[in-house]
Amino acid sequence: MSSTHSPTIEQMAAAIVQAHRARLGDQEHLPPQPTPAVDTSATQASDPIYQAALHACSQLGFIACDAHTLASAWAQQSQRLGAFDATLWPSHAADFGIAAPDAARAFAPCPQQLGLYAVLPDADWVGRMARAGVPTVQLRFKSDDQDAIRAQVHAAVAAVQGTDARLFINDHWQHALEAGVYGIHIGQEDLDALPAPALERIRASGTRLGISTHGYAEMLRAQAVQPSYIALGAVFPTTLKKMATAPQGLARLGAYAQLLHGTPLVAIGGIGIEQFAAVRATGVGSIAVVRALVNAPDPEAAAHELMAALADGAGPASHPTAATP
Image 1 (tube, rainbow, N blue to C red):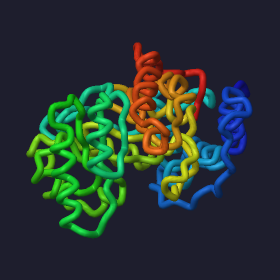
Image 2 (cartoon, helix red, strand yellow):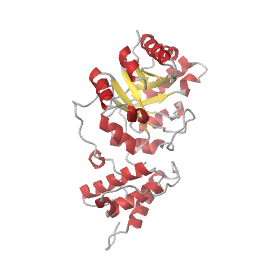
Image 3 (cartoon, helix red, strand yellow):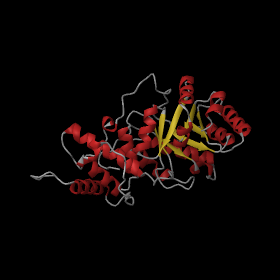
Image 4 (tube, rainbow, N blue to C red):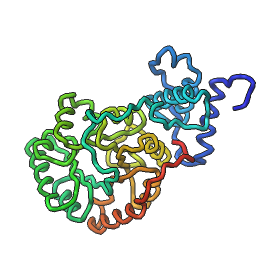
């Protein structure tokens, strides 16, 4: 912005919004959110760049915690570069406070490309999709009956024997450790409920850990745990569960992939085969599906079709810079 005077907070905020919308056109605009009244440090409260970015990100539809996270990163980016640039969406890990990996604290690694990731309701489905060649399967069995849960976890472990499938268990970490599974997947609520000794027990066992996220703030929280992979969603509208956040969309997904380059990432939420190429183009290495398999007339045929679609775009993943989230 060329001026002999420093731009105002309102001018900087308008410039961020304008730059964002110019790149996205009419795509993926979300309703504005109220500018949050967040607890800030004295430095942030008096930083016009932070205040401008906070207002702009709220106008762009980011919820309060994500608007604050982005505004903090924008202020840090401007300090690092020595100038404010409305067109430069924050994507530098250090600006978000992401520390260098610590091998002593990291969970066991998994492949950068987990391939097609099938989220399935019971052990029969797990075995069926594993035998169909799906490389990564998750048992998401919902029950309050601990005996039934334990039986399903052990049955899922048995169901993938003799296949190359990597099995993750959703939520039921104690049963999963007992059964010796490949990995465990938890959501943000489960991360809240897990005490530090439980996380350390999972880490020490060599069991992989995946964590669900739904925006910048949750993504940074998950990254601090150094899990084996991070799931990003919901990318598109989904009826499978009530979401507290709006669909992330492809532009935000691309920004997350750029920020977390080097971390295995799984895109999830409302993704059909017609969107596979666009999702892979964001730089995300894996795609999770639920309805595309369990609601298919021929699930095995659907699995082969989805795996072929994913393989078609499985070259070096791109990290788009033309679109901001």
